[in-house]
Length: 140
Image (cartoon, rainbow, N blue to C red; front, side, top):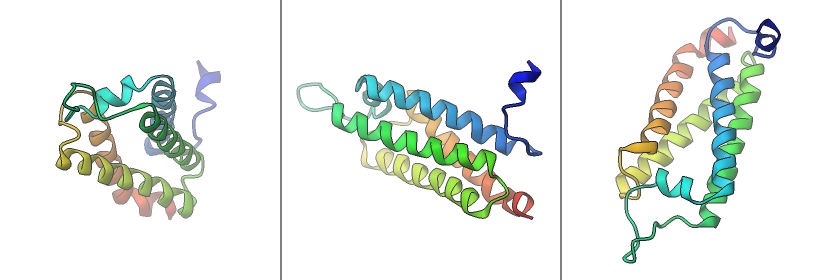
């Protein structure tokens, strides 16, 4: 077990480890979205076409997967470079952009505040708040 823990970011506090975890989960979500558009259809659960099919399609699912993977890469880089202001700020922006995106989908009705959609909203809002409040401590 100690061998596995050695791979975690070598910084004090939980934020770097959290960024590592969120990055790994983002990568797994990307794989799901690349493999099938069903993942995106469940995430964006608000409206469907008149024929009952979701508005998501294979292209939108792959685009979401790419965006999610890029966010995961930024967050992983920040986890291991938490004292670098550029990587810290990019990671914070990635959560802010995600929050803005998901709020926009909720407001426009393409997603409902239920199921898989709730988790990214909680992660984006809480982590962004965490990063804003801890910025001085990690970058001091």
